[in-house]
Structures are given as C-alpha cells and as structure tokens.
Image (tube, rainbow, N blue to C red):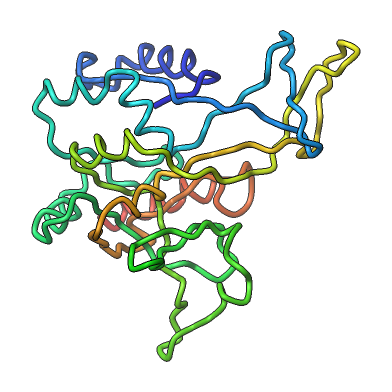
Length: 262
C-alpha cells in the first residue's frame, strides 16, 4: 500500500530494481485513502493548487482501501487464506512469520501479532492491553506517563508489550474489517499551505491536525488474538527519525548484528 505522494516513486523504484527478482505479476500496488487536514482553529487548508489539502488516513485505512481497490477480490481468486501486514519502517520485520502463523492457526484465532518488550516507559511505541475484555493497543501519545511507568512484581512494565506492526489476518478477518469504520486518532503535523491571499506558505513547525486510522483498532472486532512475544534484537529495527535513536544508522547496525549472529 502506497500513498498518493509516494506511489509513483515506489513503482519506479521497484521497476528499476526489477522487483528484486520477485515475479511482477504477484505484486499488487494500491493507494490508501486520504482525509482533509485542518488548522488549530478548525479551518481547512488549501494545497498549492488551491484544492483542499489532504493527507493519508493512516495504516488502519488499509482494510477499506483493499476492498475499494479490488485487492480482496484478487486474493480470493488466488486462493489466499492468510495475509501478513507489516510496516515498511522496521527492517527486521519478518515478512513471512511461519511461527506466528502456526500459533494463530493452532489457537483457532483469525488474527495474530508479534510483540517485543518495551525498552523503557518513554519509548514511542503503542502497547497491548485489555479493554472490555478485548485485546486493544494504546498509542504512546494516549498513555499517561504515570501509567506507562508502572511495573509488576518482577520489575517488568505492566504496559510493556509493544505493538511493532507485525500482524497476521485471515482473509475472512480482512473482509470483516473492510466493512467497519475504525475510530480516528489525531496527530499534529507540519503542512505547507496556500493562504487567503494566494501565497504559498512553507512552515517549519507543526500547524495542522491530521486524522489517522490505526490497524490495531481492528483487534476489537475479534473475540481473541494470538500474541507471540519476540526478541528486540531479532524483530525490531525501526526507522523513525533522521538521526540519533531509531534512525537509519541504528537500524542498519541492528540489521547487521542480527545477520552476523544468524
């Protein structure tokens, strides 16, 4: 799944690299949905072209996009029963997680997720919890600091099971989620815009609210979910920042260390 902004570049890159030897006919590229951006005053922003400025609607928009873009129909025709959905910004993510698949099937569940223990209370990752007897994920921006720091008798964080976007869904589960509306989460982002005088303003600080759906909000649609705790050094090398912590430099080091040990 691509966004409108990066779809062309993604396709050109894959074509240039000959899809890294993977059969092109097995690659199905589709764009995710978008939602308008608004200012702190609740006004719509305009793009350089004078149109309502929109942004991608979050990874949770994948289900509805798969339905609208014909992806689900294509999977049914190919006889696909299980679908792994992962995030592009974790270079240690297992694209085919046979252990997670085996666990999920053996437990009779429709979805499964692999986790790692949170590094510390301040790490910017969502964590698993239970709400109304259903497995949910609390985004780090929505978890109060005092609760994020609670530890159990063994010294482990009570809210420390990190959701690392390593998810498995049966095709039936995806079909179910594609017909449901997931809730929106708010993010404060930087967005250039066209002002009322026709001047294009380039901003350096966050100035607009973006509305996003998150894939983990689909968990509440199911009675149970299989959870497999992995190891950070084997499963989680995120690229979140340009420099410093969770940057390309640190992710590359984790990736190289993993293969040296392997």
